[in-house]
Length: 282
Ligand code: F3S
Image (cartoon, rainbow, N blue to C red; front, top):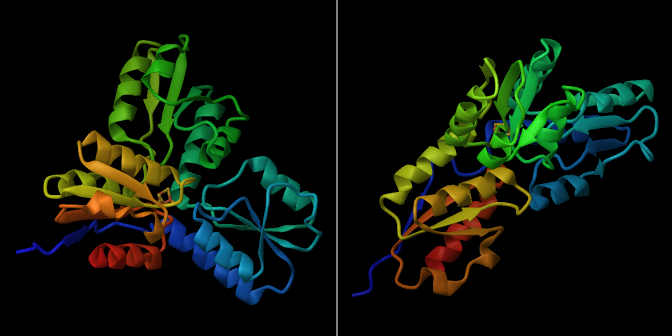
């Protein structure tokens, strides 16, 4: 007799607090303001959501060239450099800040390290807009390290302030902390990993004990989706990262009964549902 396939959906799969908040801010702004509305970069890292907002009138920009005076500028959930805020003020553009409060907290901590003359070190992806925004709060003096190898190469400093990208990993923070203890006598550590990101990864640990494969749904640009995939693989589960139901290959599911499902913080419920429906049909 053919066994029925079971889908185990992670409790925290999909939108996090910061993403929900940013979308609500953008939708309310689009509904109530008449002037042109721009967004500094993509509001969240999900093409489906960004496209929907564009249809409602949101225009994604990365410079001030075509933003007329009197417009509204929404700051994406990943935040922006302080220079963006000051340039907008100078040009008579109203800022609506949709930066996730957890990202704002990391920016504040970095600024504080800078003002207290601690060499800020950020564990993260140096090209990610969140990390670039945090670093800009240290007048771009913060050093970004992706992991232990880069941390090992750092020189000694009298004072170091360590923080991490909000979607980073606790274990990695601990490892870099241990390395930096050899580089300074004055180390301050701020665990800036957001709770949602932490919970999503912890859930995979639990799911891993009782699934045959794991599907992680999210946009390729989404850092936290990428991290969830890495966690799945690190626990030895066959893990596939997909953007939508169309990406599922039927051979992945062959002879697999328990299918774990999770999704990055910018993945809408509708896409998760479409994936679950497709798995049930295959
Ligand atoms: Fe904010 Fe964490 Fe989401 S930093 S945007 S609540 S993944």
